[in-house]
Length: 200
Image 1 (tube, rainbow, N blue to C red):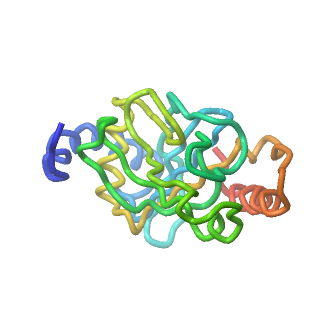
Image 2: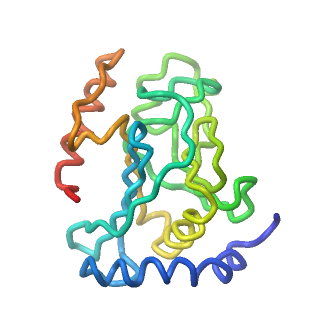
């Protein structure tokens, strides 16, 4: 279905506000948040939404189940490996006319992925999204009902104020899986340290 961002916001903005206005109030932060951080845990098939005021601490707003995420623990290495990336990513584009209902893009490959690539840049792949529907070949599929809440929140907060961290598992409560490369082991250490303040 072809639609503009304005049309998507008109349709799904009220859905988002019903979820996140009360969530922000419970968390003690203003709506809309000034900053947004999504924490995705591949093994648990979970995505947490954390919001913050301008200079304040992040607070947990809600949690979604990931309906589909192909691959296994481990970073994405190349196009076609069906892996969901792992690391610290920006969000770079909103797609209100996605084949998977609504979606926003993850900036894979990022600097880490490029610095440690084992194939040429054009073979690394891309087009990694968080989207609706319940199928995945490297993306995070949340289902339509969840993306109808989250997509307009990301649009409202703004891409430049939103981030996503993707971990192989919930490193706050579990050890990292074995890494097949020293840089992946270092990435898992960085993720583990970065996640420590995000206690539920």
